[in-house]
Length: 267
Ligand code: SAM
Image (cartoon, rainbow, N blue to C red; front, top):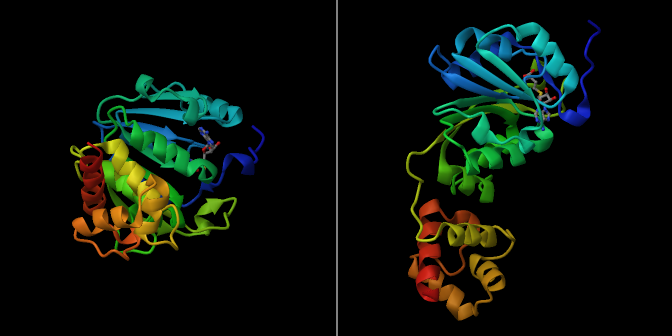
């Protein structure tokens, strides 16, 4: 078969480093009782190990050439199923089984939409062990004491316990990407990190707080919720926070308290 040339437009950087592949599969906790969803199996570098070690592997690959290549390679295995589709258009409820785990070297051009889709509606997924750009992993796994903390950190940490596991240098891929990568693990929480009275309100407050990093939280709240300065400052200080605090300094619990105060105010 002719060599498959990587398509940059589909984020194709194929893993070449066996120790990285082994480490991903170990950190994901793959064993003979595990069902795995692999997003973007590519040439099958990770897939080869997954089909050896997992109970079942379902792979979703958008590129027809890679799909046909993997059908040829592993199609006869009973524990392997490959779907030729866009993961963002795929109905997860039709393929995810209880406690299934995601293992993937994600296409970087759509990392955030994929993570958002999986975290928002896990359909029974237990964890995600995924390779992403290092910058993205830092943002997702950050807490309020770190400079990379933002709305995506709050969103992911609300639903999952997040952990940046290890970094991977560009040379581990072919073609070599311009950026450093990292593998992170998101374990879905049995209970959310905090329990706001109104989840929608909680995320509206988070969105408002990070809407302009140069502004204080009070200014962000005034603008997003049409509050007077007195009202915004009153809400903030009633949560034990300084009236000049910036959104990026608030923990998930602070956001929860603030959003609950706002709910109380409107009820
Ligand atoms: N898993 C392989 C590896 O580690 O070598 C390939 C990883 S490569 C970074 C990303 C893979 O995701 C490619 O195979 C690409 O074709 C696939 N892909 C890109 N966009 C996709 C989408 N929307 N849905 C499913 N797969 C996609």
